[in-house]
Length: 100
Image (cartoon, rainbow, N blue to C red; front, side):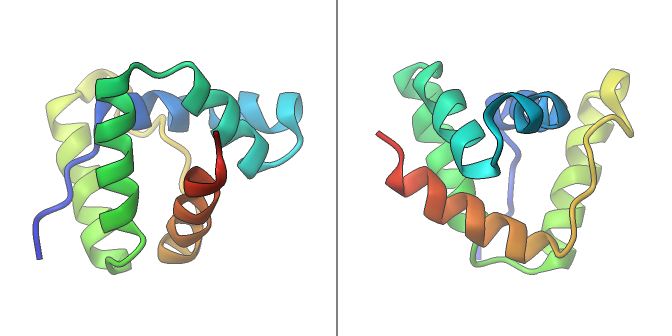
């Protein structure tokens, strides 16, 4: 299995995650609003990430976040932690596929 790499666009969504929920009411609606603002390249990166993340383990996802925060120390600890990780990403992947 390929190593997970968190795309910057996804990190920006997760950084704004707590702001998206009250505005849009659900993760699915927030993801659809987020997807509509992304470039074609960003959508491609996020699509590949979510597809892989939805079939990964919590350990692989945690490792990806640790690596991302090493590369981006200014946001270290700012990305909200959700549990269970795999369950969250399965839901995100399903919602992402259903968004226009």
